[in-house]
Length: 334
Image (cartoon, rainbow, N blue to C red):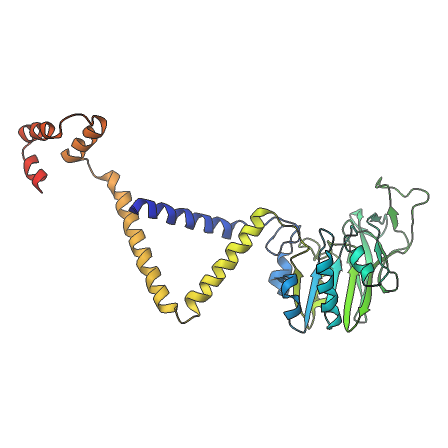
C-alpha cells in the first residue's frame, strides 16, 4: 500500500473518531444527549447506564431499571420483564402516551394511561402544560414539575401521586377546560407488586430530563428512587437515530480497545506497536508536507514532460538535457 493511501486512511479514521467524540447525541432520552431532551445528567450525576433486555436477568440484585417506552413493549420483552420482577427486581415506567398499557394489563394491574394532556391553570411552572403534582415515596412528599403529562387510572395499584384540585384533562387539546372534561385531583403515579418485585408508573416521561431536574423537587425524587440501587435505562424500548447508534458502537469499541491496550497482558506489545505506527505516520506526513516546498529538479521536469507527452522519446530528451545542463548526466546515473 502506498504511503499516502495509509496516511489518508489514518486521517479519515482520526477525523471520524474525533467527530463522534465531540458531537453528542440529540435523541430523546439518550444518556449521551446533554441538551434539554436528554438524560446525560442521570448518567453523569447518578451513574445511569444502558441495559438490554437480554442482560436483564444478570443485572445486580440492587438494580433499578427505568423504562421510557417510545414504542409498545413486545411480548417477548414483557415475559423477560415479568421474570425480572418475580425475582425481586424494580421497574420504573415513565409513559405519557400509553405504550405500556398492554404490558401493565398483562401483569394484571388493571392500569391505564390516558394519553390526554394534563393542565393546571393555577399550580404550574410558567404555563398550564407544566403543572405541579405531589408524589409520596419513602415517607416523604415531593413537589414534582410535570411536562406535557397525562393521567393514570391506577387500577388495583397504590396511588402515589396526584395533581392539584384545579387541574383538568384537556381531551381536545384546545388549551381550555371545556364542559365534560375531567377535572380535580387526578392520579399521575402509582405502584404495584408482583412477586417480590416492585413496579412504579408515572404518567409523564419528562420529569427526569436534563432541563426538568432543576424544577420543583424532581432531583430529590430521582435521588430517593435510586438511593441504594444501581440504576439502569432499558435500551430496547427506546428509538434512537442512526448517528446515536453509531456513536454508541464507536464509544463501546473504543472502551474495549482501551481496556485491552492498558489493562490486559498484551498492553506493552500493543503500546509499542502503536508508538511505531504513530512514528511512521508522522514521518510520512512530515515528508508529504515538505515535498511541495522543494523546488522541482530537472529529473522531475523530465518525468512531468513524459507524462504529458508519453510518445516522446525519453533518450532524446535526456540527451538534450545533458547537453544544455551540466551535471544532468551525473544525476541520471545516480
